[in-house]
Image (cartoon, rainbow, N blue to C red):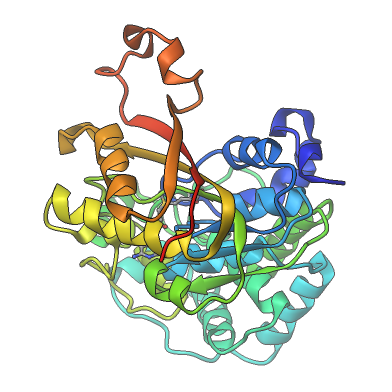
Length: 376
Ligand SMILES: C[S@@+](CC[C@H](N)C(=O)[O-])C[C@H]1O[C@@H](n2cnc3c(N)ncnc32)[C@H](O)[C@@H]1O
């Protein structure tokens, strides 16, 4: 099968796509976007996403039977993305979890109101033991178990079989401790015992029973410019989405998942190398330009670059102008072929008012460029 066979998701059996939903992540793009880019480049042999987030591009490449490389500076993103590339059975994931839990309850259980209210005591001990064991493990099975656990760590409480280990919480982001404790106390919601192994088993089966064959690749945890500088491979398709201008909460919103990966048991404020940390638009454009430059140096002549980008309305910026300026500033040989409103026909063929620009929460565009002339 070639990349052209990677039809958009509606025509695929739903269960093949399940692994892509192992864990939610802030501002992930829909699988259709990278699938469409793969279909537009049926000759692509290796795919890159220098801001890979939860690895949607990598999963699309897997569906198209291509190897891919993803880079992200957020450990939560990198851990989820890694699971998109590995080939393991649900049985192997469950065996590893059972082995850890049978090995005894190691690890320091965090103290305090939040932890007492968020997880039932035994469930928390199991979670801590799994956290501790997974910290040093680098196998494919460990990568998958880690991502499964990130996905079941917090979410709504079910009436029937539990799907999440926590007390009532959103699944996409972790509430701040003081707010969460206040809510649980006010709603009289004591945490209930959730059998960790059973939830892992159900989730692993659901995600992996029909997972497509893996086709290789790697996820790097780090800054994209630095990491790209150390890569040897070359790419002919890049599909990516940098943080939207004005969005600075990637790390703080994932604080509980960050703790599970070895972080401190409290909310992580700060920017942690995020490209959106730049103090103003000019600096942000320059930082993006460096990424497009470093990307070009790892691409073959004629490579396709597809970027989805947007801005929060509160940022009061024009994402199209910012993105165009960053590609121009890169002076890396990228020639812009098209800019379109995300998920709609090319911009020049539409009437601006059809898109309800002012009303939409986030104004998103897709930019397509081609590498003409290699950078020096
Ligand atoms: C819009 S999200 C990408 C979402 C992705 N398309 C998905 O479907 O999940 C942007 C990502 O860029 C990452 N990022 C920010 N600054 C970075 C940097 N300097 N190097 C690498 N990744 C960075 C963020 O951690 C975030 O995961």
